[in-house]
Length: 337
Ligand code: SF4
Ligand code: SF4
Image 1 (cartoon, helix red, strand yellow):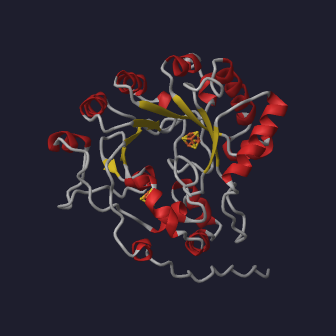
Image 2 (cartoon, protein in one colour):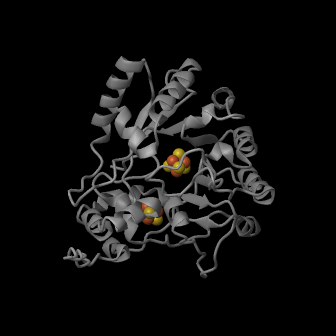
Image 3 (cartoon, protein in one colour):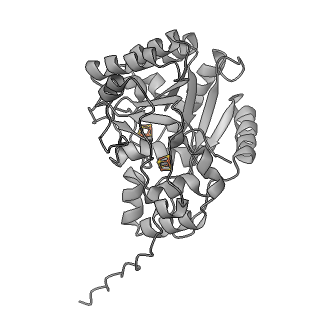
């Protein structure tokens, strides 16, 4: 029997270290955003998930770290926004405690919700809870077409998301200025080297508005387009397809220096469920911790001890940072320029 030849992996193309591309070190500005990743528990297990969350994961915030975070929220008026993510943040310990502590201090609270959580037992009250506490909801809807969403997130997710948005709309989300609902688009994972960046955010927002309003009478405030960052499951997928290095090169080739001033890592702290601090959620997932000027690893306890949030000088970067600076740029709040 003649065996088929082994496919040769293409030679890796050199990627310019991100730090070198920047020319000057990436420094922090005053911290105004506290992003908390409450844990890995999630009712979904999406193929592109950079957190590798899912129903079988059990890691979540402990009462001790939750208390420390509440102290940070209470002690530092400079925090304008508390951004809760996960997994499904609502499923993890401390969600309501953090929401209420932050809202008591008048801070904006963002919940990054997958929407389908509204239909899980014990979570049916969430839409009303969100509205009561005026949470800003940022929800993933990677396409306005059913087939594409279900391919990425699982069968039935599109319909569940639509019904969930209709529930939020009925409570005033999307129309009441105090109840903001934003949707998130991320491109499908590439199948070959024909990579593309996320489409123009404004244009796509208008397409989403038209389609969702005509089909389902849905309204929302903003659409955020987010680039697939090559970490977590996305990285594993790209590696399996032998596309990881070419994708990084593609992102590097689309480097846009004007995005750098707007990068989300400049004014945020990202906290994991163990209380460790990172410059952003992506660094958190890749275990690239933030350090002080003297090189010490930071934790929430250390910030409280220091009595300051502004103790990081240089932001830690890696090759995947090219995902944030390609084209119009990308962040948890959509395109940057
Ligand atoms: S809903 Fe979000 S956190 Fe959960 S698996 Fe999907 S991408 Fe990951
Ligand atoms: S991944 Fe993006 S947000 Fe995170 S440190 Fe790099 S450039 Fe900043």
